[in-house]
Image 1 (cartoon, rainbow, N blue to C red):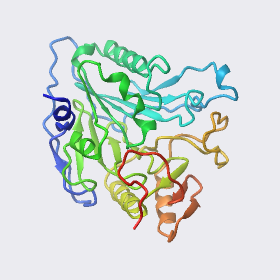
Image 2 (image 1 turned 180 degrees about the horizontal axis):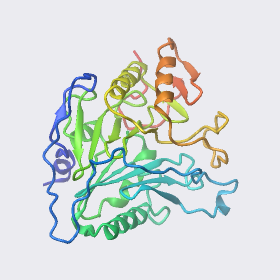
Image 3 (image 1 turned 30 degrees about the horizontal axis):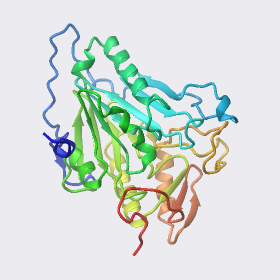
Image 4 (image 1 turned 180 degrees about the vertical axis):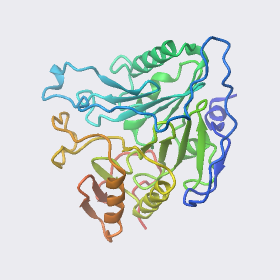
Length: 341
């Protein structure tokens, strides 16, 4: 199998035609093989939901002198024993994106890979491999038997640059860097309306399209923790909305989703606001009084209410996020990402 065929071979094989139909009930795709020859039984990811977890009071947020920064290049926080969140130290890159590790009985999903390519400059591969080894030891698994799936939220390089560090890793699949390869990775045929179910081995991740920030973006929902990941289309900071109508449609899909599924936290890719609502300057490498990473369902709903009143380009503050409607262009590999009709 060549690289292009491998990249586009669907990871999931069952999907729903639309996320907006509240009456639709998800049917699970056939599970990957979950029987083990060792002593460890399968982990139950379906009982006593949502699985409890904790988020830190403070994330690594850089320092006034990047050269003198003493904190690790990547902060690892175990939300619970089967879920880890990582953040790039702002002293290594001002974007300081968050990354996700979800462990199932047979697969591990790693979402987003930060903004530094070279392993000797920023050891993402080593940190992730150590997390996997730690989890496998704790749960009596063999590292070699756990397939690692590497995906990202959207086509901006601060979310996939570090993927280079994993290209030679065994038993690893990674998402390609085109829109076609991205949707093909999930087996989607009706992006962005279609919702697919990724089975990690009794732990399901729901995935659907959420364009607007860019045209190639996904939302992820973990049924185990019930955490909703909204990427860069909605996060505690400057939500740069490149395409207003697709973004607003993505928000409507989120509102419909909330009618059916419970959500413990809403999380995005960055933090760019202080606890008092200050907008940190773009490119800053030190944010000493950051607001919490996680947002509430109420804050998401309120942002949607504000969005319904927006009729023209501009910056609108909801109290939690800045909705930057067609106000700034940035680098992307999407085709004509900021062309308007």
